[in-house]
Amino acid sequence: MKVPPVPDAVWKYTLDYALSEIGLPSGATVLTVALQRNKICLWARVDPRAEKVTLRTFRVVGTGHEVLTGDETYLGSAHSNDGNFVFHVFELNGSR
Image: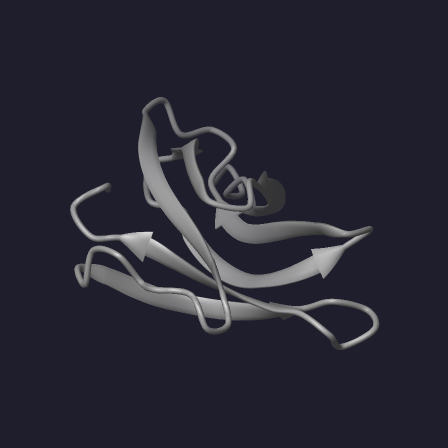
């Protein structure tokens, strides 16, 4: 009898307003970023059974602020509820 595969899950992570190092299950894929209850959050598709965790580094930059490293991948932007602030989330390359 064939055992059905265990499905992936979507997990939420809260980011700091600068630099965040987060352990994600190996192979996790970032799906989106958004503001939830005044916190910048990242949602990722993960394999909950993954035995290895990879430390990944994310930077949050406000509009008009400098992007410091130049060696990052843009993941998305989060808009405040009143629309006055927009935060842009990058993953530092080499952090996987």
